[in-house]
Length: 280
Image (cartoon, rainbow, N blue to C red; front, side, top):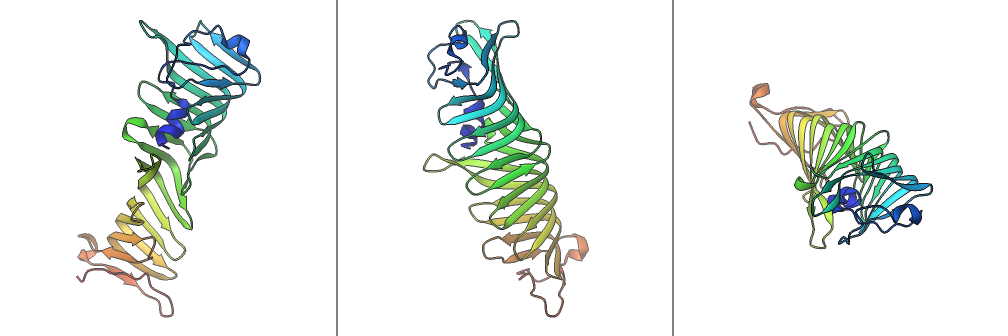
């Protein structure tokens, strides 16, 4: 995004709300908070753009969109809640996207039914059915929520989380993606952590563990806790393992459990998982 530009660049109005209304302009022209912002927020809607002074909110209805910079958030209804701050005017503190929420940046898209961005906490949470984050390299889905923490450049997928990259697939109860800005200014996922019922599936292997740390630049996953790697009917067991997703070479490491040894079950006629384990 920049995970910042995907979720937050679209949802964050940050400070004084600046709107360049597209439709219906007659409703938008009288709204407060029209100061000159560095990046104006362009709001468009099929039905109406409303100003609710009683609850201090702007509401865009009907195929609504809010664009700021290179990012746009879409929903059936968009609501921006603001507070009055002396010397600053009306400052938005929360954005809510209800119904068919979609957040688009130049390199990522996020899908869900509802999205909420807390400006004060710098946290965005997307919930509902069919949760999905799409980047040029990864597709991440979840059952419960997709979350983004701006200050830490972290994205969290909760509940039956799945990350797919090419032919490789990682599932876990929770997946945490760490993003980093590259030399070209684009934000990319650098690391993926998994916890709870971790399963890594490649065209040749299936690995199970309690936890995982996946270095994306190195294309290597480190698995921790009750590790089992299978290839066909062959199996290797240990307390930790290193899987190179590019070379398909697996290194299983012994631990204090299971007598401090690596165990393997090799079936004649089956291709093994290519372990490079240290001798016991």
